[in-house]
Structure formats: structure tokens, C-alpha cells
Length: 448
Ligand code: PLP
Image (cartoon, rainbow, N blue to C red):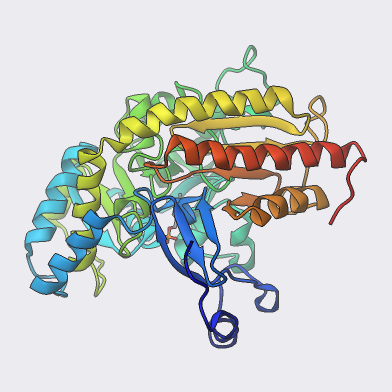
């Protein structure tokens, strides 16, 4: 049990007084004072230990304070903290080569995070194809910078609209609530075929890329049908459109493979990644391009750059982190524990009236809550919340399990090296909360 911090109230007060918190009305923020962590747990200023069922922002794949990643960072700090982006460095060679190997692509451009990786991906696609438009999907998040924000279909884009020009949106492979009203029996993969109609309406010669998440993360963890990506790849090839695969959240073992799209046997033209690349130990993103795009830039100007592109300490953190994945066989663990998690989630779907759908791949999973299984009425509206969702999240928080929830969904995305005992402990708390929600919907339990 960690000791309580002597000044925790003051630390929180000064954080709130002097800094701005993301995605919040500032006077409604109530941050946890984090003081440290180890493995799947972190500690707060009151001396509580939390079970991290969200790997922070679904990025801390190797858990808190992994000694091998810490050592890789310390070793690099002693050698060289910084080199400008035009310099060659040992770590840049090592990581570039490794990313080419694991993605099957050719060259990486390094950024500081996922939003910048997507900005650069869209820019590269435009430079390479000479076309302007990018097709993205409604239930998507690609980042908070202006271009990546506009590319996102997520309502987080609304405040910055109209944003950047040239973004066109399509519907998603959301089988539980098919936007085309289809069932698995009647489905003709309209989620892909309607994109062809969009291409026709927008002008095939104007579309540079289709940008999609490998598996949609914060907009509902939408696992596509197995033939979705092969069909999307074929559509791109038919019209000379690049396929940009945003693996910022779904990459690096989260679903059991380097890239979520590797489950579906396709190769994108551009991959973007961040989060699990360093497990968040240092800020880093990458935009990785295919041979043909790399070849193009051999003789054409690459109009882009960042002071911190290729930051040596970030690259060293990534190299150390990727080594942990391999040495500790964490992707196999994500797959194996993910099977167990899937069974537990399916059992919850059967047991609790409020569990409408469960979706999962590896240790990437979500529970979607409904008021009524037959009508599928969401337990909270799109882009909103409800007393029942408040009860669910409040109960889980009161047990010091840290979880990501949004609208009518709650995610389970623990570190890939979580123990089965810790996974069980967290799931037991989720089940208590689901039971409370069932009672509340039935009128037996009041809101807080
Ligand atoms: N793309 C996806 C799929 C994401 O989930 C996120 C962040 O959650 C981003 C891009 C943006 O990454 P960052 O916050 O590192 O800029």
C-alpha cells in the first residue's frame, strides 16, 4: 500500500488553477492525483491503489514502470538526449528497420503522437496522388489537431468545424446497429459498397485516400466482418486510392498482432501509430509508408518536418518497449487472455439485461449497454450520458478500478501483461456494476 502524499489537495488545486485539462469544462474537472505505478496498478495521493483497466489512454501496453523500458530510456539519456531531425542516429536506424519489418512497409516518418502522424499521412497522400479529398468514417477518432480532428467523425470535431477542407465521411461496419438496416443474413457488405457510390459522387480522380482505424477504438470498438478490409483494399486499388490504416489505438499487440489489419490479410499503403509504440513512456508517433510511396519521395520534395521528429529518447523508449513485447511474448498473451476475456464478456451478455453487445479482439474490448435488449435502446444517447451510466462508472470508480467509458459503452483494455487474477478482480467489479444497473433499470435501485 503506497503512503498518502502530504500535499495531495494542494497538488490537485494547483493543477486546476494553473493548467488546462483536455476535453473538459474546467470547473468540472476532478483529476486523480497520480503518484506512481507498477504493472497493472497505479497509486493516488490518498494512498489508494487503482487497477488500471484502461492502460491509461489505451496506450500503456506493457503496464506501469516496466524496468526494461525505463532502462532503455536511461541508457539513451546518458548517450545523447537530442539530435535534430536532419541527423542520422543509431536509434533511428534501429527503429526504422524494425517498423519496416513488422508492418511490411518501407519507411517511417517520426512524429510526437497519433494526431501528427495522421496529419502527415493525409499530407503524404495528397502529395503522392496529387488528389485532394480524404474519405474517413463517422465513428472514428484520428486526433485533436485541426486536420486530424476534422478527419475524425467523432462529435469531438463539432467545435472546430468547418475544419480543413476535403474530408468526406462514410458509414461504419457497425454490425450491432447496421446503418443499412441489415442483419448478418441479409448483409451484402453495404458498409463497403456505399463507399464506392461516395467515390463516384465525389469524383474518383479527386480522392487521395481512405483513412480508417484498424479496429475503431474510442467510437465503439467496432470489429469489422472478416472480409471488410479485403473488400476495402480492393475498392482502393480499383480507383488508385491509398488506404491509410490508423493503428494508433489498435496496434502493437492490443489485438494480438502488430497491426489490427494483419488479422484480415491486407497491406495498407500508409500506417500511422503512436500509443503502444512506446507504451506511452515517451511521446512518439510514426507514419510508415509503402515502397511505392517511399520511392516517390526519393525524387520529390517531402514538404513536412518537426523539430522533434526522430527524438532519440523517444526512439530508444520504442526500441526498449518493442523488445519487451517480443521477449515476454505479450502478443500471444493478449490473444490468449483475450479469448478468456471474450468468454467472460459473452457470459455477461447472457446474464445481464443491460448488456446489449460485447465486442472484443485480444485485450481490446467494450460492453455496449441498452435499456432493452429487444429494442436496443441505448442506455445513454449518442454523445450523452444518463443516471444509469453514471451509476455504472461511479461504482467501478468507487472500487478503484480505472475504466474508460463513453456514451452507453464501457471499455476493458488492461495492460497486455495483466495477471489473470487482476483481470478477474476487475471483471468482478464490472459485474457488480452491471447488476446494479439492471436493478436500476428495473426500478429497484435509485440513482446516486
Ligand atoms: N488515432 C486514434 C485511433 C486514436 O485513438 C488517437 C487517440 O486516442 C489518435 C489518433 C490521436 O493520437 P494522439 O492523442 O497521440 O495525438
